[in-house]
Image (cartoon, rainbow, N blue to C red; front, side, top):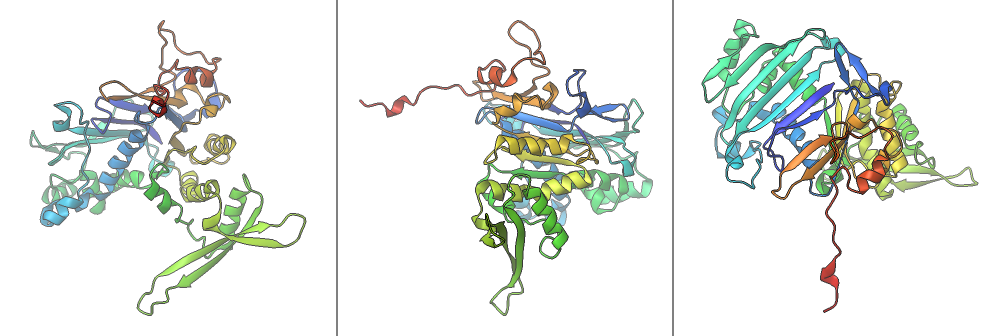
Length: 425
């Protein structure tokens, strides 16, 4: 489970930023809190804010960290030619002052491994500049321990490399192959070092979906659940999922079609949704691509939702509410809040403009987050549980969160003016 995600100097976030899924001492919805060792963790973080305030950049920061962990073993070394350098993932620092663009960007997570891995706590992070990794560290502790113990630490500028938490032969293999652009965790996973593969796999098991990006949105809508094309039981499970919001879909016709080109072995899947005809025993089929935008989005969400709930991990969704009814969004959240549907303690981090979720007593104050951007273009991230009003008073649990948010009491709303440019001369 994710405990904290911390980052700095990435896109609109210039300063230290922390998304903390640790439960505070507030009393509402205490059944949301998951106890693992000494940690008390929440399953949901909902991020609100005005357009261009930085909501999506929180998700993008985690995406950047995850991709770098998964791919950096291929950077540098013998492949360090012009083509290889162009493939390296480059961070985007804060650009609107004279110093930040030259400073390092940092990314760090605290998380708890699965029960099969001992439910240990890990602290992993790195900083980087345009030339590669500057610092990288990994620490761990047992679930009941108080302090972390170092597994490794590196610092390119100080020419320091401490691999004392790994065996001697593992240390030697890393020293031989390590490059400035490569993360130790990424390289170590490639070398099949269990401690480092565990960290890499934690990021691999995380899911991200950006429904604000038209290209990614289109890609997501074409991803089908594993075994969907061949396994009727999987199709029936998707039908049951759809029945939560559209009972007219009673099945799918799935056809695998080979290419007409004799030299092309590729195949594609044709999916038709089977609908019940009212007052009749007959059915009608509609190509899945012609279903409503909301239905297509729910189909696109299913593979990540299934994987996250069944295996644990974190699901990040940008613009969860887009094209979905508020009650459907609520049902999505309940899936993570209900232990029966979420036995592996999966977590959901999402951005939204759906203020109705603030008024239905579904979320705790420490599960509600806001982003705001100041006049210098700097974004900040803060929790409703930590917010204090102009009199220095914290928000009470019996307040009308939705009303006060839309009135601007918590900030994180757009500064509006009328579209005067359309007035006649």
